[in-house]
Figure 1 (cartoon, rainbow, N blue to C red):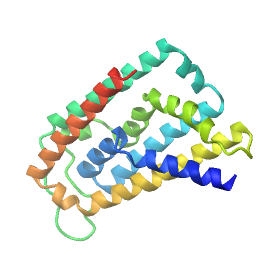
Figure 2 (figure 1 turned 45 degrees about the vertical axis):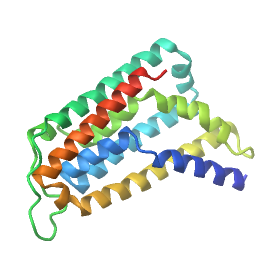
Figure 3 (figure 1 turned 30 degrees about the vertical axis):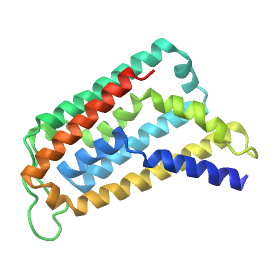
Length: 214
């Protein structure tokens, strides 16, 4: 059972490291608002994954995976949300450089596009995952195959969901820390505008991909 669990953890780790919408959203928030905002985004992402995990263990996520109409509706809503975030990034004017001196990693100017999201860091991470039906398909399709044979299916999937959550927090949390250390560089107007454009195009690209992928 231990060998199976290690193998499953390795598979989940590789899938967690693959760049996707979560990383793009975290990049946008962490660079624009700092470490604390980036970590709140990671918390929202984690809660979204937890909700899908609970639904999966309760066998409710399978209903979404099996219903073409419901899956399509959630998929299009998720794609529209990613495109909305991408357009917001493209419309941002660029951040003002972070102030010099100690203790300023999380300081910065709130531009209108970011401030308009309100409590947006946590909510953005949550909504982007709740409206991602591919997580349901990922959990219902992959986790049963990775579940250690020595555990009951529900217990095994619950364990793997927990492992995936821990991996997500560790990876994205580390990524936020790295971004925050280099935030003064990313806060330069020219660099910030370029990063906003790249992030916006990436988010819109992910939105189109979500909408067009079966």
